[in-house]
Image 1: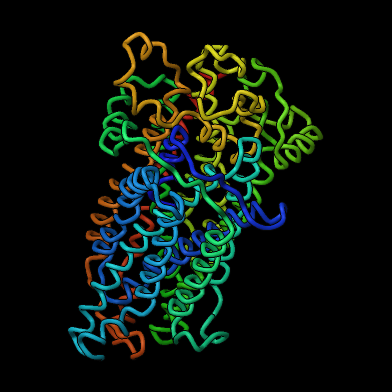
Image 2: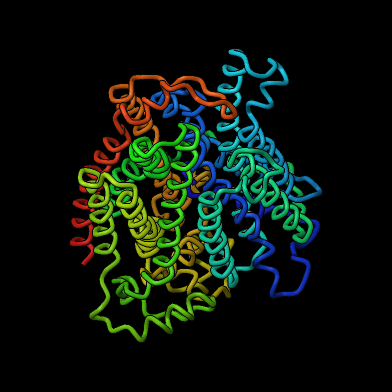
Length: 592
């Protein structure tokens, strides 16, 4: 979730290879899309649990905030390295079990083992050191850090393969509906994960363990395994046979192509990337440190009312998860409703109103027709004001000192978060597709046009090349998925004239890779910034604490004496969001 947005880096290479079988999904037709996407439900629940519980858990083990910030480099590292790497490895696989399922199941097993290690770190450490001693405390901390890295690396691999399996299995007309189901699973998983996380689970399910994280780790493990084993059992993949002369794509070539193409991007795409750069400087801390922020606020008020430090930390973590639950619920509702209030794009007015065949687009078009055009606004304007709303929420930390007020601020971030998941991909898709020659975007039957994606059938529906800002987010991502993601990797084989004539649609994979770089790099930078800020404002280390033993009074004093250093990171996020707002407004004026 935090490292990348699931670039479809490897879904297409082997479509040029021979296959020994065809892909299909077992069961009634109405179960096909849920079967194919059910694994993403568990993936998102795991992300939700990690975001809400991992930071306070690491602090409770005695890790300082600066060191904890460094630990969460795992997110951007995994997104930057693992997704492209697994994409290339899976793409080159000739396993008789298929290209995706072996990596999917292997990643699931590793993610489950890592999640259980996070939930039961002290118990695992006791196997080597014995319980209740200093070495047990030290080994527990290191095992917890290891589990965070293993979780991020393994679940990023699983998510990348889940996305690629969807693209591999479904025909072009069903891709939009498949992505709609995937988005729904992710949205519901986020809501469910944060909702379950704000309950007092040990009182309902005491047998997995005495702590909230232990119970959650068991629940998440069961859901991930059940969902992905269901998909693996019911989805039959093609078995790829690669010819000896077939060139194998490699990750080094992809990375070189990405960085060499940054300087040649059109102005609109460069602006979108810069907006994302500053926006993610603000978003990354909110995703991981919200629970810490609310937990610290709660600790100050609860300390005055009494209560043990262990109880205060546990309840503060649940309140942080509750705030994220409200935010994810509002984001899900926003994603459903906001496209209806987005005006028709300039590209759509130019190319004409194409017919779509997906269920979600039918509903969107039907309801959108009821809303007058005067009540709608351009997507760039909507995106710009979402940055403004996010900045307002972050600046609100100057005035909010109560837990309820903080929960309200976090809940309101659900609106700009929903826009952030949709608007940049919509605008990027439009910029890529409308920049191609007219024949490339409107004449799907022109066999002389080498700029069209060879993987899209010639009789594919017209909407495959018609991005609109009023379409659903999943439609636009799906349209990009069906472009030629791998053409740039073979650029050296083409003549100079052919390369000069290549449209942006033929470079969609590289452009999406560049866009991903502008999302991941800010996460590295802000992680370093967080470590510095935490070192300045939160210099007192927390004592090593056994969760099953009453914490020392020093921890109780620290809960209300140390500054709530997270607010400084949030307020800096408001500054970055205002920069993103300024660039976005400029982009909107240029696109009018």
